[in-house]
Image (cartoon, rainbow over all chains, first blue to last red; front, side):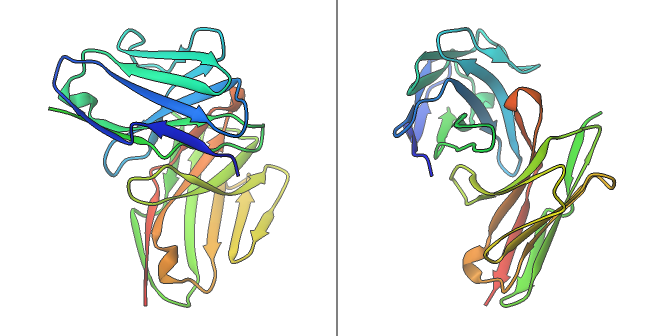
Length: 114
Length: 111
């Protein structure tokens, strides 16, 4: 299967600061990247879809100015949580689209905002 | 409204038995349905995909059925092992390749 990495794997930040999460596809190129978040004991919720070189499309209820997505290359996408608040504490997971049938997920980044 | 429901939050079974997990959906017309495994603190791992024109798919000890009339999928793990203990997620692939997940069922296999 495809290899996807995320960095950092966990991060603790203070309220009001910004955090950047990186997602890399290590052995393939992905034109499309999905970003999900998962609250404890809940399912993954799609936040946004990004295509390399263009602006991301956000799901309803997700603030685009708060969750900045950059998909500058076919192997790297970043999610920046700006002015983080405790309610943004969650598990963030990226998922590059490999093909119509195959979707792989990164190992996730645990964000805790204090 | 669109919903994906997995039958129970948790399922406890004895080692060696068959685990059966249920996924029901409403107001979707998915091209296909997927099952994933998720361990605590990790991202989901793809297990099986079944298309709308397929009734059943197997992979080793795993079997998935898909009934588009009932809008239901069943996921079976035969000869279950404690290592199968995890959360299993049902997911639908919609237009634009978006994958929408159910809440998951936590499976506990007791030795």
